[in-house]
Length: 273
Image 1 (tube, rainbow, N blue to C red):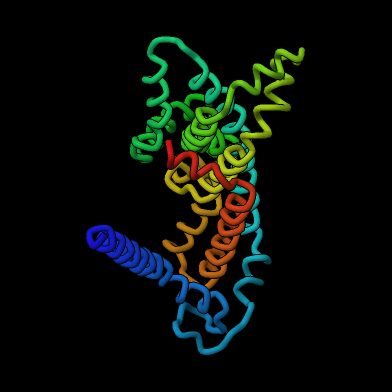
Image 2: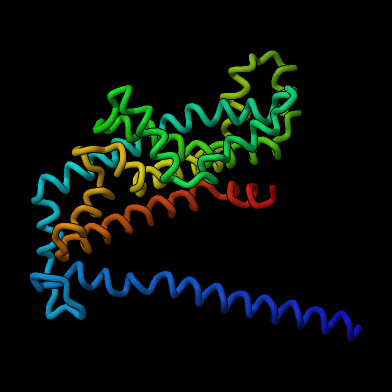
């Protein structure tokens, strides 16, 4: 009894210490926001903290500047196309990797995660060599195709994890009742994979919208929002960059919140895997 009590006390103490450590790390990561948010509402004409007053002038400058709006629209377009391509390729690939019994399928499954492992700068150089021959440099859809390479592993990992825990007896029962396989996949399998599909779609969108390295190589003069922010920091630093950063943080936060709301269970399944 004493040993069990001691073990339970040690576990509770360990959980408490882990929670404190995680909270400290989380607070450390959020510290820059305590500077960025106030500066974005600053009434000063340059970066100054604490701000002498508060104003919406930098948000107004962002909205009135065509270059910022064009970069934002271009990033949204690229992220949307990237999401469509990643889902369109990743979901069938996940079914193939999970359901196939071909030899070497495990090796192919591991290779799908290569874009996560290989440094982005290496992928950027390789894609630049290919895209320059295809005359895709400077095209927003070229950037979207390149982003798909990075987003595809997220789709495959999440969807494959859910497929491995899916009870195939439900598909067999539907087939026994006379349903065709496309109808079974559409009405039986995919609805139960909804958490993974939603999570994969939002992660694909976020990974494309925030990606900078590939955009620096492939976007040319047609800048995406991250590249526009990077160039703005190099050329001229004003509180507009803080306002854009706040809007970008809010967009990503909304996407993550929707992922949590509609994609419950997907990340748990992935971790269990």
